[in-house]
Length: 130
Image 1 (cartoon, rainbow, N blue to C red):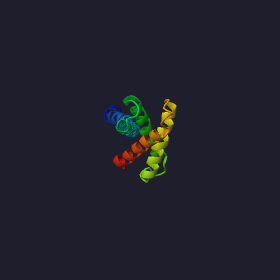
Image 2 (cartoon, rainbow, N blue to C red; image 1 turned 60 degrees about the vertical axis):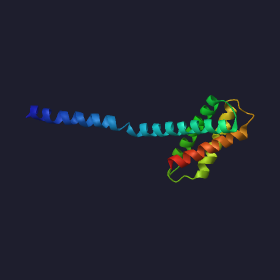
Image 3 (cartoon, rainbow, N blue to C red; image 1 turned 30 degrees about the vertical axis):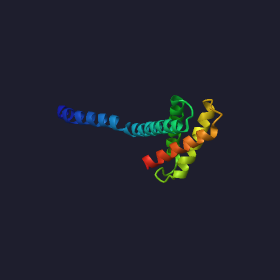
Image 4 (cartoon, helix red, strand yellow; image 1 turned 45 degrees about the horizontal axis):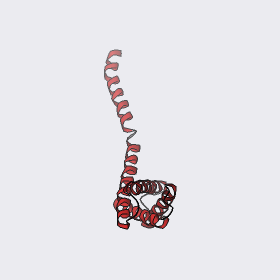
């Protein structure tokens, strides 16, 4: 009887434990994908707006846009109901994050332009991810 229980119970127990180990981390991985998605959207958007305005180099604009996208994603994650966000919130968070990132990276001459670029990033993220 003991061998029968071992042969039937142990394989199912091992399968259940393996399934639990592989399924538990699935939620944080999805959250990481959303941050990376928004950082990518921010980088591309900020490179385009920087090129349109004729300001800065591509690398600095891309970095500032990626940081702005990640901050907008983080702000959406902090809300009680992330699906109930408004475009004004995303645009405002993007403008503030991009202006602050510009100051930190040494681009103090065009803070208003950085805020405009960040507002565009927040708006695009709101449109694409809502």
